Picture 1 (cartoon, rainbow, N blue to C red):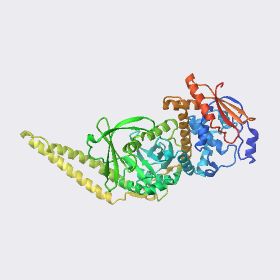
Picture 2 (cartoon, rainbow, N blue to C red; picture 1 turned 30 degrees about the vertical axis):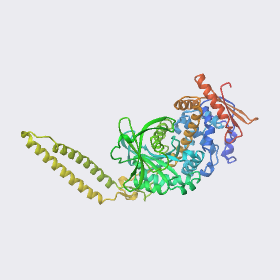
Picture 3 (spheres, rainbow, N blue to C red; picture 1 turned 120 degrees about the horizontal axis):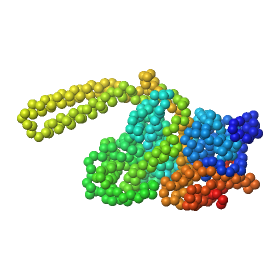
Picture 4 (tube, rainbow, N blue to C red; picture 1 turned 45 degrees about the vertical axis):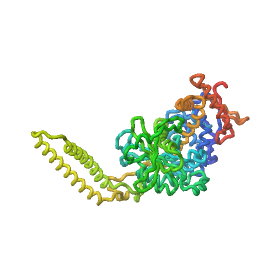
Length: 563
């Protein structure tokens, strides 16, 4: 039965099919490692960790129930166990005490359970269900969405994934792209994996927007939208990659506003147009900046708002928006606050191992999937390279032509240099024209089945990644909720997150009282009296939730030390 297994009766009963799962039974325990993660349980339940699991996942009878597996995975994420294998070096009996069982499943069993949930369940449907729930819980957060792609590097050799430019490493590496949808404060809503990256615009149009239209909590704005043609359902905020006047028109027809950087801002505006404006970011930080606004007609005749911020160095940052209601400051703030999503990526990479490969399994790519024609890509790359050389040659030729008077003894050399440069320019132009003609004969996109055999590849299995990413999103949201409690007694948000992590890793005593239906979690003291005061305040706030441990009648009561 494994080290730490003491519940012989229920293990035999479940193995014989007499029980669907083992009952949750807590024992009196002292100094249980990582028991501090139990302070996250109220938030985990609120954010839907155990919400409607039977509807989305198929799970056979066994000692470990569906809820116990999900709780264990969430607790591991909060305790910074970045991989399932990390559990291999932890006492299984100690983790079992946190679940109300004799021991936690061993690594191989847990991997099998995760694989079973991924293949026989619907992780993507579950995530969509949770996203709709989160939007309904915080309707104000469901008005402005940040959309961005996160390149997840693949270092294995099971398949030859297409190469992507990874900005954080400044290299082109084999990778897959995850597109994330976040609220203005960085809280995650949705993630969409793309083994073959079609680009931000297509993902927005074909994946994110249809999903959002289904998930929006209510249609209370329908009347307002009908009365005011300039109103919008929600706003999408993204970087320059999503700049497309045609896309803006399509979204305008759906009453969806777009905010992004102007890709072709043109000449600077007169500094007299700018005025000092004060605006508050989602984080609470107040900023004063010089702002100006104009109406701008784009290439396809769509009228947009153009808002510019004048930096201290004199550079003008241009923002365009189809959010026609609201002042310029609100439009600018939405985009300038987009670093909150970047902070989310950075934090998840550091603390939740966001890019970790979950399984080595591979999925086939449908034959009809459209991919970039490798022949077109090669020709296009050569043209870009030659255009760069041509630009440099033209610049050099222009400098020679604009030179001052030439000394008589240098006239012959000057003419020779110009002739050589002119010949090089003509040759480059001919090469570029030849390559362009060849490129016209090639299709830009072809079906996957038409790829040469040496160019074909398989996609990384994404179902298990969806499952664990969703659990990590719930864990992050729960940690943020705890941070909001702690920050009421702390001065800095960073300190609140550090304290939350310390609490998760701290030991605690578990004291069940079956007669009164109470499970007391007695947290150990922290490093200093001030921190203890903050933790005591947290315990008082958590006790107000009157949370019951799932699968039992035990109400959770949090205490600190001897209190």
